[in-house]
Length: 393
Image (cartoon, rainbow, N blue to C red; front, side, top):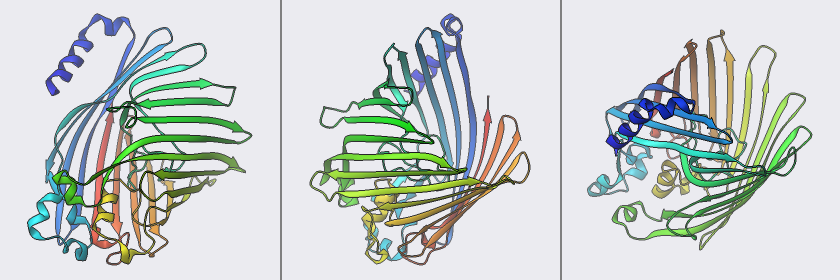
């Protein structure tokens, strides 16, 4: 697969077609170092990532774009989920079963996005692997079942998804979207319908999503291939975003109807403001009925579902605060605080961004969990940091 992608890129770069059809090539190189102190030891992982983007607009009313990612890892590439759960919960797993909780970072070359967008008089049609970004929340998006955001860096790019998408304008501020993500059959495929509009200083949307999810009641059963639950999930929701006297306001709501499981609601609400001195402030609240509100009831499956992004949080009610201040034109200092309203635990995520040159960014993030044992942001998850450089070309 790797050799095929390299050959395809090379042929396209050298072909007369790429020049004739006004193909643009750009991308970035991103080295990253991740360090975590956990269980009286440390973990290091170094990542090399090269992203190549290409876009062609040479045909009238047709746009083609693609992204290729080349990623390799060094350092400790095989980790264990049990490193990051509270010690009392990890101790419940028999030592002979520890290997079933391992996961490995493998070198990869893959097609992240590749799609064609065709503009017709009444609608746009997008076919292929494409980014699907839904919701208005900064950290949490109840209406987005396609992507997962990291608390450390919630604005990092999201992966592509295979889909057919139709976008049709209904008026100057209203449009309608349909999306179909094919799987093995109609029942398991992803279906989405969304209407989006605006009134005054506010934009809003209503959304419906149907898909099938796989989950397990036991992580060990997942690896043995038994007791895997495949169930239908239907989401009915909406979002809004707007501005009042310079204050940004947004919100999301989702009602999740599950097959043979408990239905649940998700709510997200936030606001932001920029002061005259350039200080940017943001606050966001997230309520997840799927999560528990008593940390003493957290079990191993709860932690693993959270780490594997099956649930957006392990705690039911969460708050997130973020500030960003420009120390100079090139250096920004930022800090995040995320905490559980149910158990009082929290984590600090300080950061620094340095625009070394016009096309070079350097980012430093720390993730300091300061909660007590067994709580949502327990220090037993470890303390870590990321140092990342990105060079655009």
